Image (cartoon, rainbow, N blue to C red; front, side):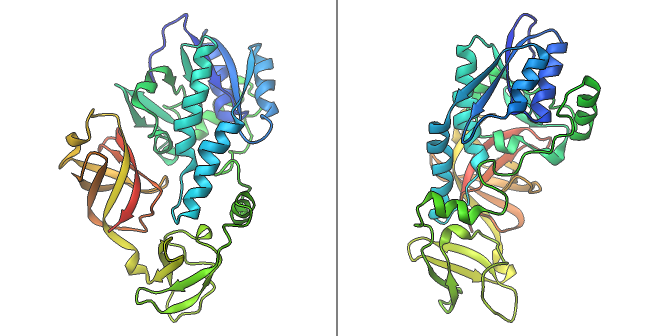
Length: 348
């Protein structure tokens, strides 16, 4: 992580979970002056965060970002689904809210750094995959502007989750056995359709046709927002072979399906570049890199072609399955350093 000089003041982003709570204990034990800050995003803040701060004898502040979170994260999330894309709300939250509004607030309160419980590292001004490769959280952090990394520290980036829980127990962290948070913090597990329907006032339920590449009508969909590339279950159509969602066509309000082989792509087009290791997009031309097209994806080797000042094409050594518009395409070096981050426009 970034080296912290003694005497510096650190704000700890406190969610009430085991990761951030252990960070607070570690930094306090190491002699740093710290305080806790919790974001109020869409509901009341976690009471565990305040309790941890009380146990440590440190100040606890709450930053109300419900309006910003609703506008920058939830509206984005729903609009992407409405437009036939699959969003990544954590990437947007980290960029606009946690390391945007929260970091600004921490500095306003006198902090020199903001510490979080992410399993990630910062080295020489770029993000690096943490020790626990099963929890590659730099994927979600990769849209943070480079200049902001100077004010961020990840104290547990060199640890694995099992090691962290053991340490939390030894330190006396009350929430050492607390379950990890759900995947989308503002959507109840299994209730995505209900959430989008309610948020849009029912507009998301715009029925249309399910067709194949030849235009044959195979069934009816409930609304583009309820489907994603690669989906097989829940289509409600009968066929001799399994069919998968290949494309969501907003213009014609159609879900296009096909066989598994048709999901494979050799290239992807991406935009919204956020660079760490280079200052200009032109420097990416002909660069060989390793790419993740979703958070739990493996690394795929490919070569970059710069299309213009805002867009790149990546051609892979092998075909990639279910490249999904709206998801992040994060570019890594072979040793896990983040070259930059982008959002997928389409696969080809």
